[in-house]
Length: 171
Image (cartoon, rainbow, N blue to C red; front, side, top):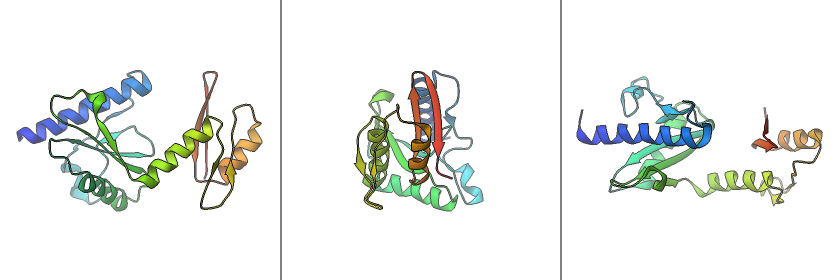
């Protein structure tokens, strides 16, 4: 195994551990994908570098000469070939950097979807340019309103309301 491959594999493992610790308290939910880095692509579809990251396709890069457009296109190609609906992102860091100092790169359109969900979940009004509806949400509103709004959008929202989590998704 080449030095570069070992560095990349190591970064995928450390990134999975860091994200798992931050998001799930180290429960092992996020892991490095088996055969990450090429061997898994023999069947044609490929897969993200990390598993356990719902709706996000993670392409991990540990390099000094980062090429963001090539990296995001690699993730998009994997998504297309595997018929996934995940959002492609690239996580990158250089040598001698801490994992938490990694960069996250994504297309502006995808970032806008995530930010709209965040704004919506925190009670801010947003306008979806595709349907001109105002999306307004406050955790105190009744469940039927929330379900109707979610069913009329392409959003997935997890609301943490006093420690209890509820998930609604457009089918």
